Length: 249
Image 1 (tube, rainbow, N blue to C red):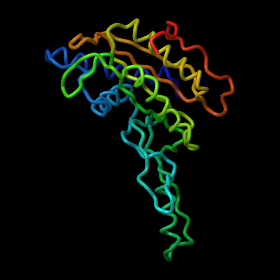
Image 2 (spheres, rainbow, N blue to C red):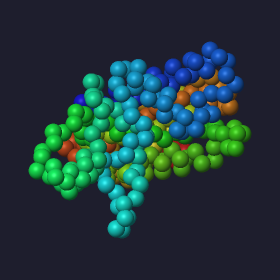
Image 3 (cartoon, rainbow, N blue to C red):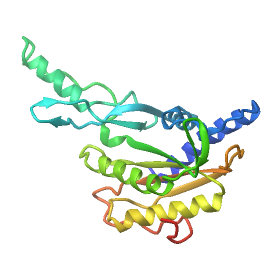
Image 4 (cartoon, rainbow, N blue to C red):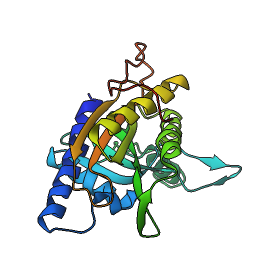
């Protein structure tokens, strides 16, 4: 039901709309000046433009515990719901409600499930933002951590998604600001090759790149969605399709 290309097209739409608005107001700062969480509503706006709903900061459906005490549940950046969805069902909340009901006079009453989308039917999307020229304490300059941010961050998020037995569809969206479109596509290809080298459970990515106003050295922005390979998908990932060969990393 979900495809990486569908996701990347919606996300790039959100960035394009926001970039157009900044250009219209002649803003001295661009999208690359925003913190990662400040880009989330922009990406969600692109999803909404397609008629779908994106929820932000949604607890993962699993119950996480450290020793005997429950800890705060980890949250996913964006969760995309199917068209016409009445909301996202939270299995943990339903389980707790059933436990409370079991301790009351209504223990024998069977409650119908509320309307909504099961976690297995939504698309769970983690977001990582990387820039060749980044702001450090408000000052832009070359990003010395560029290579590690592009390779390590997405890998960690993919591992987190893969741990969740109730997530059938999900992936990582990497928003990459760079000096030129060709370089962005090349580096996405290197990033995905590194994922394959580590035998991560991924399928072929989808990539789109657009130009943007060069304010600090970044003249283009790209989005790469790397989807999880579903357990039932035994075909494995195809080639990166991003062009280029491993080089900088």
